Image (cartoon, rainbow, N blue to C red; front, side, top):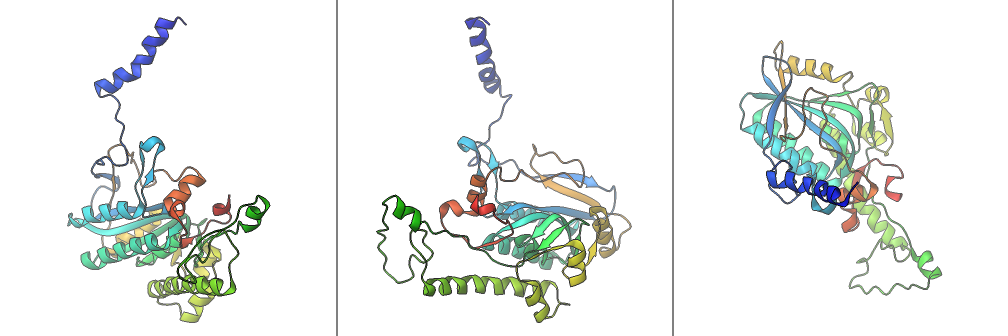
Amino acid sequence: MHRPTRSILALVPLAWLAAGCVTIQTLGARRQPLVETLVLGESGPKVLLLDIDNIISEIDLEGPLGIGGVESTVARVREQLDKAKEDDAVEALLLRINSPGGGVTASDVVYHEILAFKKEREVPVVAQMMGMATSGGYYVAMASDWIQAHPTTVTGSIGVISAGINLSGLMEQHGVANQTITGGAFKDAGSPLRPMTPDERAYLQGVVDDMHARFRSVVKQGRPALSEPQVLALSDGRVYTATQALEHGLVDAIGYLTDAVDEVERRVDAPEVRVVSYHREREWRSNIYSTAPAAPRSHADLAQALGLDRGPAFLYLWWPGGLAR
């Protein structure tokens, strides 16, 4: 190809940009407003399909060079619920949960926002678990009145994790010494630069145990038929299949998303409902299985979404080995 031809072709993308054919949206730019799309049904009360998808985070995920990105779960859920509050035709929420969990605070905020909407609007909330509804994903489900697992759902993982490593041996091999100065005996507890003392481990374990206790209290509130000893026994961090979860009383039924829609119809006493989804203009929605914005694409993205790139974090998350890769 001749050089002049290559030069002309190189100008084509710039011409598109100049003509307004290509829109690049940075994370800091004003996002497009949410629009409503009917994804199931033709008549009856309106039901909002609310996605709790991917990592539950309170931190926006930036795209390469600051272009694109994914807003946090907390911000997204709050914006959708605010829009639903303005529409008196919305008579129920259908949660579609497909998440391994996420941050302790982010999971609790999403749970609180859904619970507050339910109480304010006095509407039923039905949860449908998809492939995964573990840890923080299960925590959020506790805001619902009725929970259904997909036949292949993995759920549970009622526990807390705070990942950490000890690099002191590696540092010693390379002649690197820890010179951290602290004011307070526990100020650098859990530091990767030195071994943890027994007192520090006991102190941090107490923090994790307190967060674990809150998780159990949320489960007890959301599953009142379970006794406290039952909740305690089920809260050792293990995951359960759909069948196991049903046997233990962690869910109410096993079925498909359309079965969950049938349950909503029973709860609003209507032969049919209109299921709607709120989304940005450029996010395609054609049916009840259309997905939410993309998940973190790498372990660096995962660390950013969970705030691990900013320091230690306490997590309601089931991701075996994922944080160590």
